[in-house]
Image 1 (cartoon, rainbow, N blue to C red):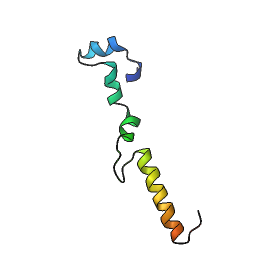
Image 2: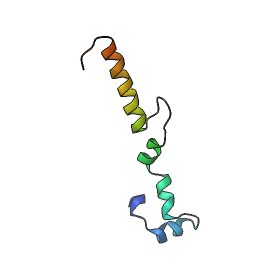
Image 3: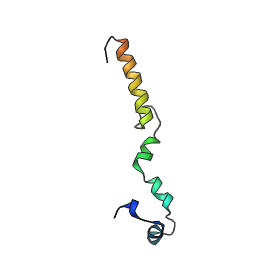
Image 4: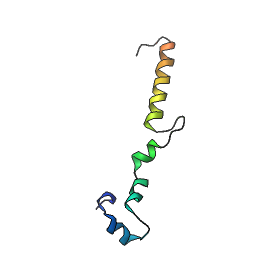
Length: 64
């Protein structure tokens, strides 16, 4: 059984403080997306860096 398969009752059986929202904190994609710093792994940050690098390479005469 994975964490995603647990319902609210299962979570509370482990610890009464656990709630379905707890699983949101453990979501890897959500945590990566939250890393919005320069050079960070968030998809938006990666897209910005790719655009910057493409512009730099084009300025140097490279065709992409």
